[in-house]
Length: 514
Image (tube, rainbow, N blue to C red; front, side, top):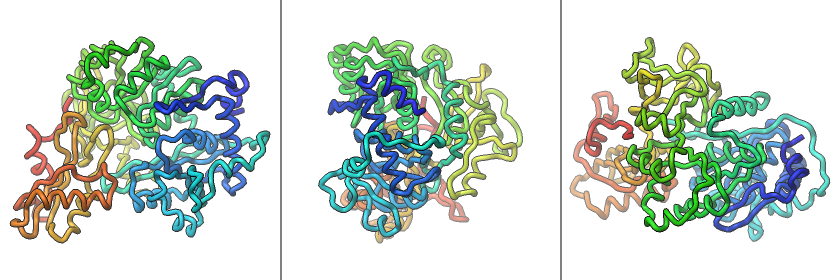
């Protein structure tokens, strides 16, 4: 029996989740019935165990209704960033072999319904005014309220993570073991992830990310209530905590910075006493920001280091962090190994190397065995591609990233696509895209460009190049500023020495500031 059936029977009128600031709410009775009807409609559309649906929506009232529908009949669900451009979204839809796509009026322009229909992907629109596809409410409205679902394996997520080339990589696990795997991983976090029917979880981030997908699903599975922000707003987040008695929450450091910048009277007028766990991850948190949050909220901050692949995880609480300032914690899922550059020996405490996990999770990148092999070493240990070290007490510290990934406001950005695009501009002969310091977001995207004619360098051309990128890529991948250079540092073999480019903007050779 689905947990939704249990909760719909035992507490039918209790709110399962609500949206803020709109105030729209869904009860357990509604979530169970509507997800059951959606699941039946998916079966009627030809979906079978192991098939994939793609969800290309903003933070929408029906988002988790769709995910639970897929979950109840053994389907994979792939969530797609609403910020992607048409070709970027199309790549994921094609790569994951989606049978159906759900989209809205906001994402309609990038969904390319006609092309997808020609490829055999059924499209369902959440927008009643959209005549180019089946309307969602009509689609599930044909299903009787008392429809029964077959017994089958539970479905699970099939999420995409960007690679060093910028192409998204699908992370897919067998249905037979996926949910057991996630429950084992979550149990390791029981000290700060003990969800039950009394949990009120504040979801602050876009739903397409791994953490909001998995955390909201876990809270709902446990019978807790989710408070889901349609868009993050610092004052709105504080108001939600006070209004709904939030007990658990998850953040990225940029959100902390924005809340700390609120006027003191705004920060102090909200009763935050219900909040017991404020978990953050996804990007480095400046030490002074974390200290300020602990002074404000008390020792309820918890940090973890992990990835969508979930090959391992570390975490620590506020008291531990204050005595191990800058650490991302001890292993709680898998064991950490710091390996030398040649990956042949483990490094002693205090000596940096490539971070590997053993005994955690295993996975494969969908349709990309070469990328999968790059994650694992000959001993079967897996890495997220980061550099760090362990101290004498076994706490992990991050010092750099193996790849050239930029982390801005908790979002991972890979620069290769923007570099390739800039090099196609008729005025450009070479380009490097790097992360440079930003007080609010940690890093921001900057392009360093070598022109065919150096005499053309001007603020106007810099803005033209930014616009050129924004017309072809999602905004988060595009440079916010452009600098010009007369000579791009490359080796004789043509390898770009990004280290030398970054040194112009960072006080020291780029590390992760904590």
